[in-house]
Structures are given as C-alpha cells and as structure tokens.
Length: 316
Image (cartoon, rainbow, N blue to C red; front, side, top):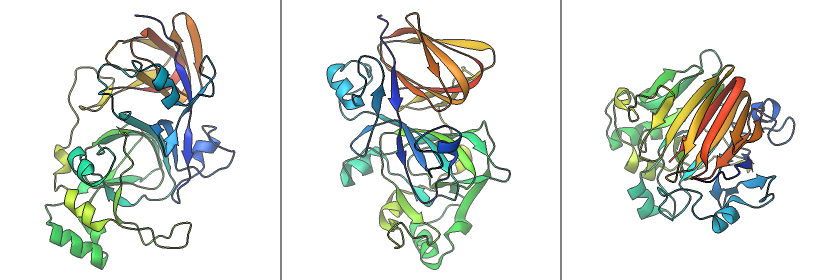
C-alpha cells in the first residue's frame, strides 16, 4: 500500500425552509448566521459537488480528482455514478413525511439510484422525535384517503430520539425528521424524495410544495419498524451496516483509533464534535468540528486521535 494524501473537502450547503442556523453558527459552515438545512459533506453530483481544499488538488472538484485517480474509490465501486452521499442536517422545523424508492423503482422511473440511508442523532432537543415507519399495516387505498383528508399523521410511528442513537432507514420505509434534531446522514447517492405530507407549507415561490402521492404509495412498505435493523456485527463502533455502506462512530477521549484503508474502499472521515487529528504517512491533518476528509482506497494505515471528539467514518 502507498500512503496517499487525504483530501479535505469543502461542503456544499443547501438552504431549505425547515433549516436552522446550527451548521453555520456551531460548525462554521456557509456564512455566519445563514440558515442551512443540509451540508453535503461527501458529494459527487451535478446538483452538489465537493471541491478539494489544499494540497496537490486544491480547487479541483471531486469529479475531476476521480478522473485522474480512478482507483481512489476502491474495488467495490462498479464504475458508475459515485455511490454515496453524506450530509449533516439541521432540522429547525419538521421535515415532510416522505419515502424513497429502491434501486429497481428508481431505475425504472428516474436517472438516480434508490435511497437507503441511516441517521446518527448528533443532538436532539428534549422531546424531539422522528417518524419511523407506519404504526400499522395499511393498504394504499387507506393511505391515499388519509392523505386526502389530512389524517395521515395518525398512521405514523413516532419515536422519541436522543443524541447518540442510530436509525437505519431502508428504501420503502416512510419517515421524517422532527424539529430540533441535528443528524449525520449516510445514504446512497440519490436525491429522490417522494413527499406524502408537508403540513401545507409553501416554498420560496409562495406556492405549496408539491407532493408525490402516486410514486410514494407505489414504494411505501408496511414494514413493522421494530423489525428494521441494519446488519449485525461484533464491532461495537459500527452503528450501521448494509450492502451500500458501513458506518463507524468513534468516541475519542484522550485516545486514538487505527484504520487500515485497503483496496476495496475509500474511507470518509467526518468530525461531528470537538477537534481531532488524522495522521497518514507521518503527516498530521487537523480536523475541526464539521471538517471532512476523503482518504483514497489503498492508502494504508490511518490514525485518528483526539482529546475529546466524535468522529464518523464511512466505507463502502
């Protein structure tokens, strides 16, 4: 293995009506005081593209880097679109009730991937909750009627959440982030969202935001949310694992962790609390809260250390 330089990435920020100011105020993303709903920490898409900060590739986009370094993603990569999208999300207000399609439905109806994702709760105000599936086994006709008469919320499964929890959200599971929650989201590289209810909110154009009832009802699965789990592993730091991604969360208190970055996959490292230090090939790279690094596949041993920090590390 060769020690390749990790890439510090500049986030892509998204302003959406439900976003707050925590990402700009606490994480220093975007402009001071700016309402930011999402910060795309790892993205290689036309509607959001990371640029590289510093080093040999300073100012280049991630796509330009991959053109020159095709093996940097790893041997698990099939050569198509980049497979993952990683975000920080600040929900100052409730998000719409929504669902995402699987790969087969997405391929038949869109040019995007399906969307399986996971949420790590970075912070949550007292009483905060998410919608996590349905609270019963409903038919499409029953759901359609509830959407039409405004009673869909009565069919949702509400779960109180607290910092430090992780939730796996496969395609087909209806869901929503509630107000007062800060989330790290790891997902397939897809931007398909089918809204089924949006609290009659209007967008920046003064019009009601569109719903996608037919598509949503075609993909919603009446899965008992108690049975929704990611793959199990003996590693206590793994907070979610599926065929699309493996996510580790490290609580570093005057401690360190070593990772071997082999040929199969890159490693994406994101500091969500405190400050950390990433070391590769004898070179130290400082990580402040909100910073994110892409470590190319086959880079060798990476050390992440901190006095008091939380770090999310993701691979294929």
